[in-house]
Amino acid sequence: MLPAPGDLLRIDGRASVQFAGDRALTFRVVAVSDRPTYAGWAWLTGYVLNRAGNATVRREIYVQLVGLRGTTVRPPRQRNTAGAGQRSV
Image 1 (cartoon, rainbow, N blue to C red):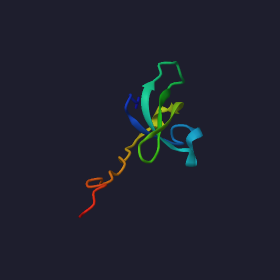
Image 2 (cartoon, helix red, strand yellow):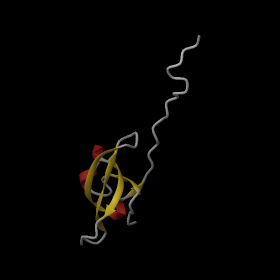
Image 3 (cartoon, rainbow, N blue to C red):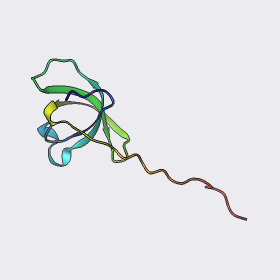
Image 4 (cartoon, rainbow, N blue to C red):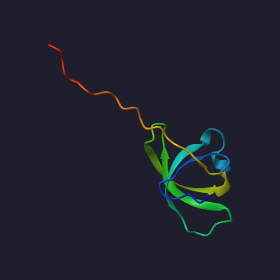
């Protein structure tokens, strides 16, 4: 699977040993490099997402394509702000 810009991936030890264990991350792809690499590997540029789905840092990572897994991030819960700041009389 060659990812495309906009793809949301779970990067863990299956994609590269540097992300094994508690170093796994959720990653939104913004670019796939055309630099030559070993067969089955790719350079990806994108953003690391936190649990709320917000981008926290831009990174370039080198990963094994067979280890990439698609994922989803739940959008942050919307707070009910209807009537906020209003008082009943």
